[in-house]
Length: 268
Length: 268
Image (cartoon, rainbow over all chains, first blue to last red; front, side):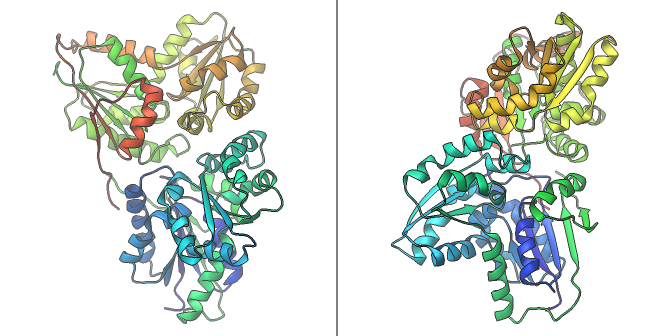
């Protein structure tokens, strides 16, 4: 079991930012990644459809004997984590709880903001979970539906992105938050723009490092950390691997080393 | 057969702009519409995945005894029309040919521009088909991948949309085109912004009226026009009917009158 790979999945390729931090934190672990590029984005979809798609992705990885599942997508973690836990015989972690814990641990004031896709924000899960951890923290949220397409088009620092971001962030700025959770794996690509609008005094917290650290802690507790060995990385997508290689460079920072394959989706 | 409904499908709800014109042109025809809102958008996907999804949509309508199929989506029409024709026992029309015919018929000069999704533009179908119709016309194309999300977010006339559109249209403006085909059913929502950038002298041509007129001509030729009767309209989507009703207002101009249902997609 120890030597089995870690299974990581996402609606697309934003989750590769999480993979990058997991490789840093756990350099000997093998990884199987699945990105549903044929049906991305999940952000605007209903909870019912997100859960259905997400369970299909989890099943694909479970069939390949992963020792744990990492839900490297805020929208899936926010809407469907419990449903994945129900079908999984191995431990499951999402990105929401580790990110909240990291944000609450380092907060200086009492006001947290959260931005994410419509699916993530409508789930209400950030307000719920932060409230359970610390009742005195005020949580303000904002959906930013265009941030994912803007990030995928490489316009993270574009003038138009700044204008759109100013509109999305206006309400959060008025609330004088001290910490802002980037509740979507794509948003680090827009971090400079977001920081500029919110001001230097606002601390941005993203999911990548907190999730990698939480995973390391979980595997250590369960005695599932592999011994010193050479890791294998396998990446699967449901569409357009050649386009993924191009776009992944922006998130992953390096190539996918020829370990990328395409799998097929079901037929009606 | 005459009294069977017309089947119309799209990757999402942009195709409702075509439905609106079909109802005007053929007021006695019943219609079944299917929009794949669980997997929209198709624009950035590969030809292979677009064809697979599109054939599933066509099959759904064919099982419901439609007398013809209207592919109310440029991306599907540009990449997969032939594959749909192959599986269909009834006549099929897409939006590309009627739109090209309308544009070529009214052109004053010799330079046509075409904008569309990445899938549509990469297919090369507009250059091919315009070339076959009139070799002396010069065709310039441009992909506008952010226009669909901007339209769906209701930002057709937003300042940020104008900046993004200026970038997309710069090349076409330099070419001094006289006619611009809006090669995506979402783009009429951005028509004012596009017209302002391109200038009054450029004629914008969209798919809705030409496709409705072509369908009327086809049904007349095949003696498939229904007799004077009260039409039935049924709308199906694969996700989030409540959100569709809200967004559809921007395209369809009126409510869907309670005739909207949700169908399920296949499981892995």
